[in-house]
Image (cartoon, rainbow, N blue to C red):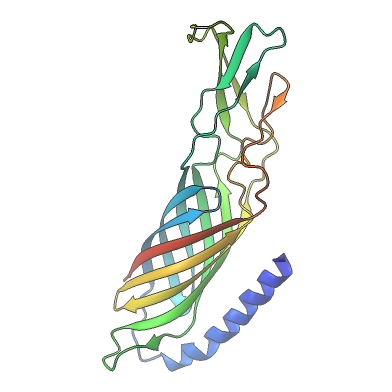
Length: 231
């Protein structure tokens, strides 16, 4: 089982691996800034795009921030009846899941292992512990009511409901193997988080019915590919 303690031990071990590599690379020029773009598929049946920027005060450690944009591949709909059965309500919003989130993180890397004599191609490992901060944390949704009669599809009433009690932030751990080619780096990664993609809608109640999107998923797992440019 993955626990917070196990994640902490992993980060400490990885940081210790990076220490000897710093003194071995003093002769190489350090590029302080990195701009990147990554894409991922998650176990929520969703895809992600994340542009990011990072600053590296030393070669193998830095801080970064990304803007997450995510969409589900399916569009679950939720509906029900009013107490007197005269109207059918349904959620008009397409997105019960979070769409945007901020991702600050610490970036750690191992010393590179060169693949050629000219030292133009190299492999390294990357670990980035951080946070996922969705905004807004509590999502608003539009509710439409139509008459409970065959052939009538025009809404006769509207309501707007907003979720309450959502978590403000979640932890995450990104890992990747990186292929370095001078300023350009390609990466293939695995990411783990307790980020609840539907956390902004789980406490919404309409006509006494609580929405229950994507139940049974405790942790988010994703596979990512990325490209970055260092300068």
